[in-house]
Image (cartoon, rainbow, N blue to C red; front, side, top):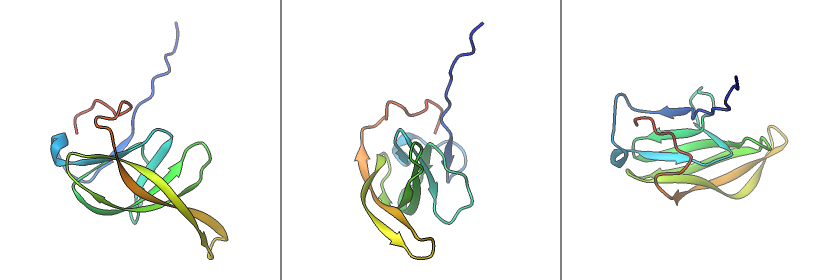
Length: 116
């Protein structure tokens, strides 16, 4: 018997109950993990959020390089992080990536099929 390689999408949302896709924004991109800066949540594959302005932390799973992006999210849209630069962080002596949210295709082919 084979043990299938089944991957599940881990996501975080900032609302209760069901909301149709047209009422939320989704941040996702293969090879990246995301979290809302200021929360103590673990990084997830996908953020499902009500429209608004957010500071989103991100990390590339392969390299473990990460940073943050300030994003204006609109309902019914899917976003990916576009790395636009890096900045030196004196307190840690390391560089952090600087990103922006960019629109991406919806529905994303790697998006989970679970209810939003």
